[in-house]
Length: 341
Ligand SMILES: Nc1ncnc2c1ncn2[C@@H]1O[C@H](COP(=O)(O)OP(=O)(O)OP(=O)(O)O)[C@@H](O)[C@H]1O
Image 1: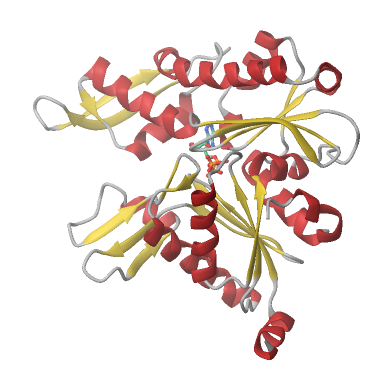
Image 2: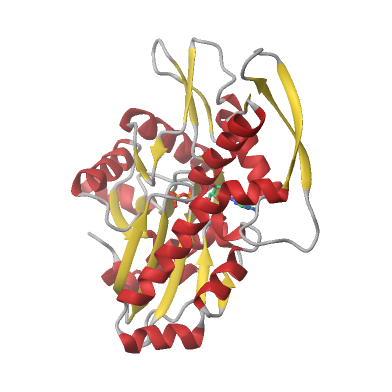
């Protein structure tokens, strides 16, 4: 007890966006101190960490058999418990040196609708990685706070958080979620769509990182004013030798049509299911896109045109969740009520 109290004195508060694609850490009084891919590499034999974050992502699909490189989260939740724990611990170690963290209190963003088992897995991973007390917050709630939406007001605000594993739509009013849905289609599915395009049209295998690069550089959800193209390298499916082809924005847009449609439909459903007063608030105020997927070219325009609605992209969509969680942690008295536990 005494020890805990003592540690508490030195401990700092930390907010974490433990995402399928990226993990971000915010430290009270310091801001965002870590922003890296959710990836880890360990030695197969003894589980010892070899790399984490950016470095580990580069290992994906490139390591020798003695090293296991992985993205331990899938669809917004923990797919590999052991590797997630190692990854969180490595990240905390990274920021600890700069922030003198001792057994921090942690607020972690999780997708809406995660199961009890999934929540337990997040909490246990954080505990074993050294956290003293762990709170959870729904990602869209955190994203809405981070994007500066007036969630404390008796007025409907809509946020659409498009991450790597999940797209989360929520309507929030007076600190409470009036409607929310999480669909397991987001940036990762878009990458897979590009991989399928390479396979079907060009009989070429490309890696996940290459597919992501294609999506980011020339992907879109609506026709562009200027055509875009790029050279894409992979391996010939039949001959097994390296090849390079040129892809253009039109074929990539077609490939992305399916995941984009799922995202647009999830927003449409949210309007259908939101009570009329709140829905008209959203119509008046416009909705906000957050998460890395908000940056898919033309997605804001596409949603705006299909739903006849004003759409704004959050100022820094990739950090909305962690910034919102950080704000909630810094003003814990006011925001304690939005925590899940
Ligand atoms: N400029 C861009 N254009 C299109 N997609 C992008 C861009 N930048 C990042 N992304 C995509 O955004 C996704 C990552 O977003 P984000 O970091 O918000 O997700 P996450 O929080 O890790 O995932 P989740 O919320 O599902 O757990 C990736 O799929 C990435 O490819």
